Length: 372
Ligand code: PLP
Image (cartoon, rainbow, N blue to C red):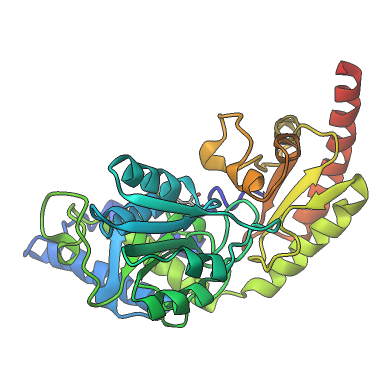
């Protein structure tokens, strides 16, 4: 139950990738037949991703994942003298990128969020300046699942004539995405968060949006991202996008998530961001008097994988910046554990998890009472 860290490859995705790992190993830039087979596969996948996002194939730029897509959007957009707006709950791929911009003397505003982890559109509007060149706000938060008001911000950005980037890495495959209804210029997704392979992603770049490449090299991806295409990965991401379009969708996941939250209610837990609109798969639970990391380890020993804070920063015992930005105390943040479900999670999985968590929460509480 750590799908926001990564999701299993769907069998049909693995099947689609197989020939490009074993037999058809052409370079998509080569003019011989092997190269042209690879090129055709990349372009088919581009078409699938374009249908998934509601954009033109030429607006799809393949990258190495969500982190690169976010970096390309930010470094490719901001220049000296600009002002950039983002929020305190973004993924580190955005926050660390804008921190670098600030080191270079670019002005950055990191906006606060409310108790549910949601930024206010009005705050975004108020932060606009004549030199604002970029707004970057995520669609769904990786730790709580909270949805940010990206459509409203899209309208604000359009009125002000400011470029808008959306990190949709945790929304893709969980809720429908339409770049036109959001009104964004740039949007990031990542293969491995939507049952595709790790190490491949997409940056949607709206037609007419000038982007400074961050890699020096060949003219791949219409000169927006140099480097030989990861053909197997791209084919896998294309297939994952097709499966997400056809998928049984969010209702089943929301039912499972609600079952989990209801089943754990009596163990003194609160749902962080529970009042926000959320993607259907994520549940961030705060357990009274429980060390989240101890609970994660106890559950791992019983075969249940969950996460305390974002997986990308686990290993560091700093409390989650997202939960702190929502006003939780460091202790409350450290008592929080994220459960994230995916297409293959079953009702039996949820019931087993409830039983395991119930037992381990009691045990961890008893142990910490003894230590105290
Ligand atoms: N953005 C968000 C919201 C994420 O959750 C993640 C990964 O956890 C990323 C970006 C980075 O994506 P990737 O792992 O593909 O680099």
